[in-house]
Length: 324
Image (cartoon, rainbow, N blue to C red):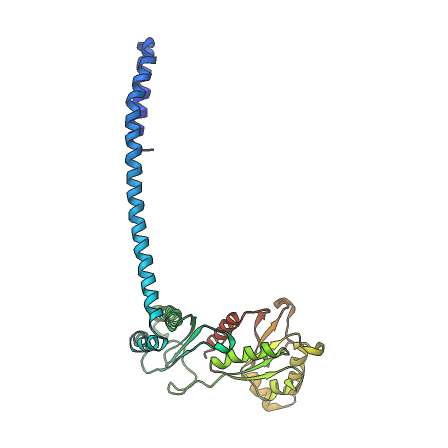
């Protein structure tokens, strides 16, 4: 309630009490007089409040309109600029600004991956990976334009850098995540084995990992896949859990474990660096279990069906989480 409404109400009550105790016969006349006085005041207050609210709404609308126009103008500039020009501008300006925030004497690997029209994929992918002795930073972003993909990566990297500096400030002995190899050595190309009996799904999955810089192999589960899982020692295995001829993923894993157990060099290699298995099925994660072993790590479960863009995002997250 406004202050003038409170004052008016209190005045009305006091005057009514006074007249009621002293001059009872004047109450009807006083009530009419008070209404005549109060009505214009209330009308004025109402009009003043509406005028003020309308003015405030106009100001707010102007701010929102200008903000929307600025955003549209910014987007229109990006849309007008060709992808090649966007990449050149980012490389010359914003990329250097981010890299300057990284620890010194590191190695930068970054690239823009264009859309794949043959698979009706209209998303750009940007991958950023920086390694030094003091720390390691990795991020992947997708977007309709190179600018949008880079913006996702930039925000992610700023968060990583902030956490790194905050940890250094609180722990003087902290230097980051030291690299296992020399700073000038490039990370090896990740290998992916895709076990899938649907040829279209297998091809689409392979194309995604290929675009992300991986080497891929495809198996339908019937062509000696256990030998590939055992003797080739791939980094990742995307395993369809329900294959043709009633073959299940756990059967393939059991067969591979038996093969690895027969060779000391394989046992040593897989024990040091287990292959990461990503199960892919319409079944829920709780119903998909790998046999207990030390050679294959059940890293993740992807629930079918997945759209191409969702599958691409999951593949990117998988590689980033493992330092690729």
